[in-house]
Image 1 (cartoon, rainbow, N blue to C red):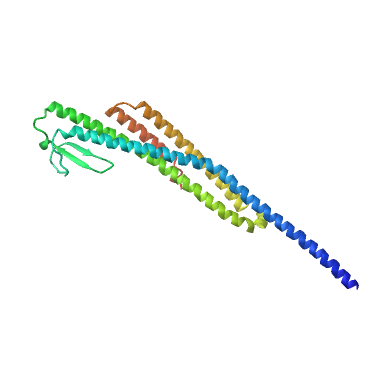
Image 2: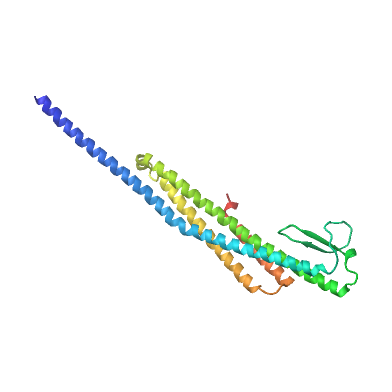
Length: 262
C-alpha cells in the first residue's frame, strides 16, 4: 500500500518538474524569438534611412547623367552645323593627310575627318579660323560633359555597391535568426556570441556606409556649387578649369573608396 502511495507522490512530483521544465523551455524560446525580432527590427531601423538616401542619390545622379548626355548630343549637333559649310567630311583616318578638324561624338562613337584638301575653296581664311575656334570650344565643352558623366557614374557605382552591402546584411541577419536558437546555452559560456558580434559588425558597417554617403553628398554639393559658378556660355578656358575641378572631386571620392583597402 505504501509503495502505491509513494509511487503516486513520485509521479506527481515528476509531472510538476516536467511542467516547470517545459514552461522554462517555452519561455527561453520566446525570449530567443523576441531577441531575434529585436535584432531584425534594429537593423531595419538603422538601414532603411540610409537605403532610401542611397536610392534617392542614385536617381539624382542618373538624372544629371542623362542631362549631360542630352547636352552632348545637342553640342555635337551644333558642332556639325558649324562644320557643314567648310567642306565635305571623310569617315576614314588617312595618315599623312593634313587634318583641319576631327569631329567625334563620344556617345555614338561617330568620327568625321575634315581634311584641309577637302575644304571649301570659296571660304576665306578668316572664316575658317573662326570656325576652328568655335569647333574647338564645342569639343572642349563635350570633354567637360564627359568629366561630369564620369563623376556621376562614380557616385552611382558606389551607391549601388553600398546597397548590395545592405542587402547582404539583411540576408545574413535572416541566417543569424536560425542560429540563435541552437546556441542559446553556448552564449552563457562564451560571453559575447557570434550573433552579438555580427550585430555589432552590422551596425558598424551601416555607420561606415552612412559616413561614406555623407561624404559623397558633400562632394555632390561641391559639384553643384561649381556648376552654378561655371554656368556660362561655352568658353574653352572656363570649361577646362571646371573639368580640372571635377577631376579633383573624383580623385577625392576614389581616395575615400573603402573597396580600395579590401
